[in-house]
Length: 337
Image (tube, rainbow, N blue to C red; front, side):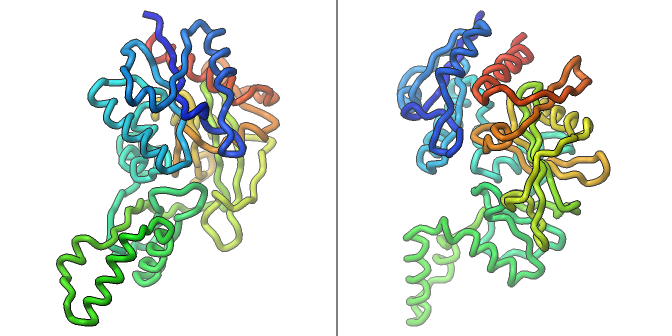
């Protein structure tokens, strides 16, 4: 049966372009998919959530930076993937990965050793400091909420500082009540311990960095590469603002990125890759939707794989929309034949 593609949007927004609040051109994506012989439609997210699922459709999702809309998307895909076995691009668990490094950490255990294994933990901040470790808040992009610590006191401070932005009024009221009750010797330690603020963190091994990493975008058989440098005295390359588009990229990096796209099973993916030794790589983070498109927009060249093994460097002339459409078709051909 010929598959139908249905693009899911939020009030006309299907992300993301630049600036972030500017969505991609759905008409261009639809037009390209139709040229490749697919039946294409679109649906507003709220209509999809409260309507009927078409069993012969594949629903293509973007994501959203608005936390309420993001949660609305997650609620739908997490439930519908169970009760109606909805077919989505990317897969439901990959949609849940956006803005949630905890889900990434859980999934990383199911992938190959090429993706750095991570621990997903929850703590009230009384956490033993482990040497040579990186800690990440579950949400946030770039290097925000990513830190190391040399002792328990420093770790506790950094955990709390990284989560200040997500504290709500109820957390603050509870803390204030506890302190007042403690002063008047009316506090209930068990009650406070149960309801106090806990922090979700991802813990991973601190890799020995050569002072840079790679942001690699893979669309089907096309690869874009950005080389990012860490600032002096900082282990983080993401968000440093110091980067370049390298004139030459090792085929080993391109092969590695393409291999990971297959391991993750997605039509397109953004990979943060560190070179741990000459020609040896490790993926430290990935996203399969709503990733920053700057690397694709600004790159002068793209690397295309020909005949499954040969890489060719060509001018970057395609739009993000065209790339997404061709990647979706290639992915469907591989999955459904």
